[in-house]
Length: 369
Ligand code: NAD
Ligand code: IPM
Ligand code: MN
Image (cartoon, helix red, strand yellow):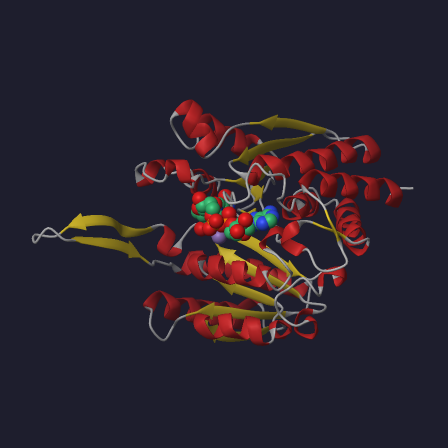
């Protein structure tokens, strides 16, 4: 068997707490399924700032490039709220996406049967939901120039960010969405604000052209982003794959997470372009942040992080059977009534981060016979 090189970056807040639980699952995969991992770990975010004075070191970027896949926790800590913008903990994830060219962020919102009551929406609205949000992650208003804060002659200030998308940037992420749709419900909804923004108008044109040229078999629709937010709450099952830009994708995926019961349930995969050696750079992380309000209390839901590892096995290593094993284990643990606080409902058994992680591993043992 070929050894798989994993770089593990737990980060801040609940990042290390939920990563501890993934470590159990990774160890289980080596033990029970004979997968050989070469794992290294490093500091990012506030944890790196505290030790190295920067949110991420160049050698960590290099290690990420050299790894077969990166498993990322979350970054952000109110302690660093007053450092310069280019030194904030969040720079770690933004830089990793940029430097590795991780342009396509796959954020699946899937409702586990046992959790239909966990959403704040009615069970009949969310039952059976399985949508995939494909968020562009290296362009748009997050990175467009000019940007900054300027002081005006009268002493007041002006904050500037610019939404920029090129044909090539739109096309490559739309391709990912169309390819995914072909393996699912065969429908793509492209989301922008072409009624107000030129970058949105170009987005719509490029997606429409690409569709006509290379994906006429996939059903394509277009939706304005504000309407999409409303439609996701009104009738989320109308969607299959949603493809959208960086900022809208960030907002819509946090919204979609609540359809599944909690932000603590949503994993993600961020993929780049296949290189000359056939390797595709990839980073896996939950969509939630470092959750400073519950950090250090052992309350965090580790399932988004565990499911991110399942996506890693599927998308980076083609280990679909192992990925499914994790998803089934999670599903069975939820069916058994265990709940972290964020997905708790009456009659269920509330547990902390570690008990949830241990339960997933115990279930893996059972499933593996
Ligand atoms: P957050 O996602 O950290 O938390 C939002 C709410 O969801 C909080 O109430 C939190 O307790 C809850 N929550 C999140 N994950 C949970 C889990 N696994 N289990 C249970 N509850 C969970 O968002 P925020 O509070 O707006 O941001 C906190 C920090 O995290 C900020 O510094 C932000 O920049 C950063 N952040 C980082 C990432 C990342 O590293 N990819 C993503 C989002 C936010
Ligand atoms: C996410 C986060 C990040 C983003 C932050 C931490 C930079 O919110 O991954 O969703 O906005 O992309
Ligand atoms: Mn976000």
